Length: 318
Image 1 (spheres, rainbow, N blue to C red):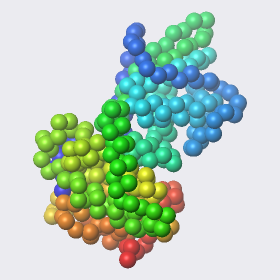
Image 2 (spheres, rainbow, N blue to C red; image 1 turned 135 degrees about the vertical axis):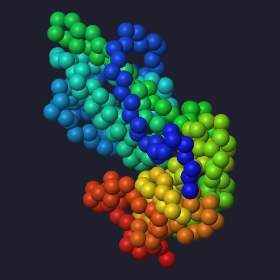
Image 3 (cartoon, helix red, strand yellow; image 1 turned 90 degrees about the horizontal axis):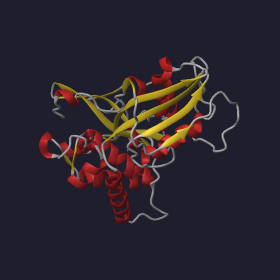
Image 4 (cartoon, helix red, strand yellow; image 1 turned 180 degrees about the horizontal axis):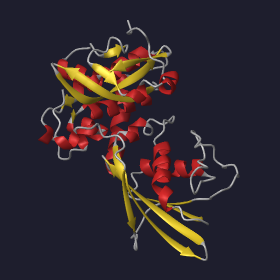
């Protein structure tokens, strides 16, 4: 069970920090997205997830799907600052935070790429939002600056990419390898090679213990680091999976916790590699919700929409 400091009592997913500060000088920014407003023109590129245009705000983006795609690409590159520039005929100040939150959230939606979706979501500790604007003759020119809090750098992620490739090659999978064998190989490797970080000062940065980089190169992780590495390896092997969060209870103590669900034969099963690693057991491998003792999912993972997309098996895998 994790013994977290007061600052770490939350599994860090999206702790969004908005700074309502007028910037007079933005400095050198590395990425800009030019936004088109109030247009019905169809985006030239097909987005994986469509952003439903908000008409209840003072501004809406006719090409939001393209903007989201560009933000996602910047996050993959671990871009230090992401700039969204646009013009409007009205004052949008009261809606800027809402717009930025929604675009950022959609950028973290699940895609077909192993290094996107939950992999990015649980390796970013939120973002700071600043903005500036100029007004002339009733025309407002806005610049939103998003500064993500990454758990790993671009260079570290490149090392992760190389390590993941080597690990998967070591499994020796071929065209005859089934999904169970793939899931079991990933699970066994993670449990064998990653230690649970019961001494929180062991890693150089508190972020590392929650990242795939920390799990691979420090060989230490907390539940979030285990889950992120499991997600990345399973996705690279072609296994559909997600990271879920909730409350874990053991020996009279309860903590915020993260683990995985993975698809096998058309149904999803729970896998808690961090508990299995600590306890040297497989009691939390490919389990139904009912058999996942001590685990209670957050409400969003029990909601009808999520359960419809990721249907859990009613019985544990035999």
